[in-house]
Image 1 (spheres, rainbow, N blue to C red):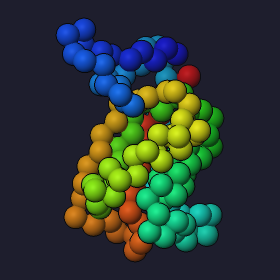
Image 2: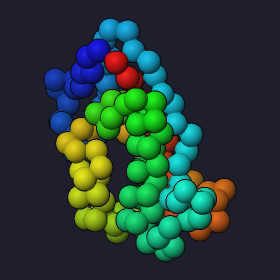
Image 3: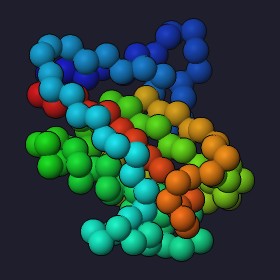
Image 4: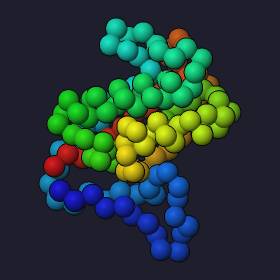
Length: 134
């Protein structure tokens, strides 16, 4: 399986995500449910701490991908839902190192969406992912 970043040549290169991902050759796809900052007992960790919740939610996405036999570099899309865009922006300096710790320098196609609220009480964000496994 080959995963290629798609970058229109006339566009400025994005920072921290890819504009598109092309998966060549046969693959298996994993679609994760939206993951909040739950621990194994479904308790929200990092109450009021955006960066801590980001770490846990992304780790949860990767746990699902790993359970299917994949690795962070197989993630081809992430969608991050936040209830407070300003909290996300305020935490950006902390999020980069957390992202690189968990995902390395692999940047899939990504979207960030501000929503009115999340279903889980205390959740500040929710992340869903798609992975293409060889």
